[in-house]
Image 1: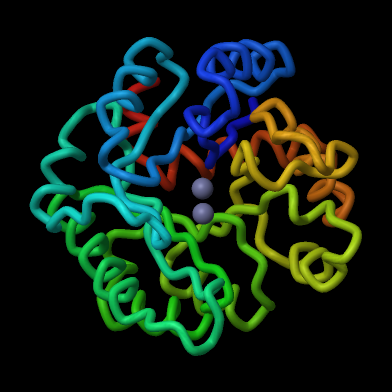
Image 2 (image 1 turned 120 degrees about the horizontal axis):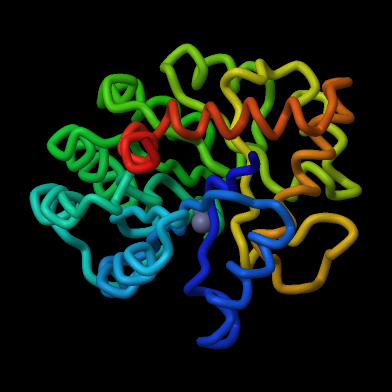
Length: 259
Ligand SMILES: [Zn+2]
Ligand SMILES: [Zn+2]
């Protein structure tokens, strides 16, 4: 079994692409998907897609770079009551606008999402880009280990990985693992505990080698599985099975839905 723990069907180029990409991924042997929210305006569309496809779960949240509606913790928790919503997010910090930008509002929004997760009784999906120290600090300050969740597109070093694992978080590896210049990440990933790892595409972004430059598809999560397997000296099936099991351990509402 293979699970794409983080993708955005609704951000694919053409409106009909979501159904096509899902069918292709199923043909490629990918069984379950977490179709992650980046804003609340799209909530109804995401929920409807998940209601139509019982192997696609969704979330409720606003991406750290999102410029749309900025709901309260209570409003997010209310959206998360829907049974197809298995997590709060994606939330977190993205310091891609440079060192001098004001990220105070992102930090406040991140804390609000952690509070929403506490109220909803759901884990969080954390996006952390160029902000490892503040991500770990806020997760610790907000006692986010109590809600748990995943750090998606994990790219940090072993020390940061250990602090996140100590907090109880899962780490999700993406197609970045296959990039030519990702030598340091591959060295880190080789030593990460398989029982705490997930795999993802972050489709339509971050297409893995050998598909670089194209719009990413959830079916290509297999490239991530195979890369991780070779780094850890394991069979791809073993990595697929473990990361699928970890996904359902990380997102209990998804596990309950397939029982
Ligand atoms: Zn992200
Ligand atoms: Zn994403």
